[in-house]
Image (cartoon, rainbow, N blue to C red; front, side):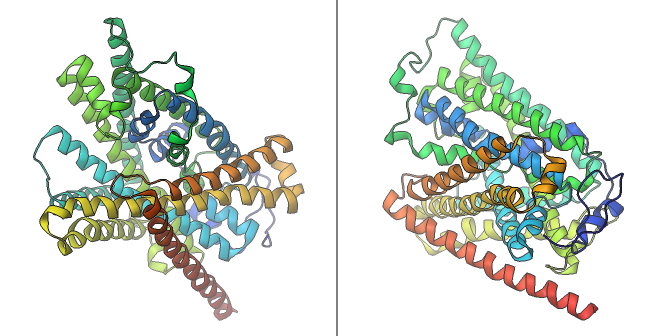
Length: 495
């Protein structure tokens, strides 16, 4: 652990790391405006995706088994570890900051890159989901890859421009959009109740005990649902901007409870009304409402979920831009990425992320399909898109493993520091570390060996996704070496 300056009594946290400028710069420069509700909505929107419920429904009642299993073995351990590290080190950058203290600058940049890069790719993914909803609502719209790509780029551009406005205004907008997301989810749940009240039978047999079991045929769900729960530490990239340390614990408790309830109710509702037939269709939640309550309310639900997709893109923009901000402040990245605009928002970092997301979209949906005949272009875009998303998800899972590694190092090598701020018994922390690491490995293996799409067999999937993941990790490793060398060079010049 790097040398620390003496902590003030008012801090109530471990001392500031003298080697991390970001720990002192952010509290001095950026306003502390994020309260418990702000962080709770940010937590929810950064993790919850409507497609999680429709994906899980493919396993029938076993979907609920997987939601409980992954929640117990992965999500809750992640929450506990995030809460413990967040209370000990409530600084901007979260995982990057914690890894720097436990493992040093090289691994801090590596883990930070592995947490940041998927956010760039997933932003494009959520914009694509927005386009899919428009296609389902208005048949014939955006039918070709280049049209989809153009629409995705437009959405990303607008989101980027909104994200660099006054942070309080953007956060208020997200809070409203999350309210709409909950309204859409309530409509889905209410539809299931009305369906049963009208005398319809559930589309699946919940009384069949075998249908609840984990079988070789549904093992692929473990990895997919693990990815639906990933990113618990993301909002704490803004830990230097919260109104108090109590926010760290409260937003995790409330956010986790709301996410678990929402996933369970929406998945159960799809199973009751549509059964496994609704699986794989991102529009299944809206279809559930339309089937029971009519198309007008179906459009209301669709609008609510479209708003939640916009909120997710906005949240990803400012959550992961904070990693670029702290990397720049700590002299691992160009100074320009750490510049704040008049609203004290890291505008350069947000616009840089947005440009990368647009570049990724142009490659996947516009340039790559041009190499093939027209009739094969859409299919090719789907294949390349899913392979890149899976590889980015694996990189994200690698970053999540650093959560548990960091706490293990802290328990073993810094027991006194841990004891001063420990909020869970040591046996609980060790159980979370072991369960979290094991679940991370299983999620990686599961994602690597089970194809997400029928166009690519499992045998082809593992080496395509695996190869791309290795390339991403090599880039992260080389970037970490360069960034760490740059930091040492800056220190040498200042002596």
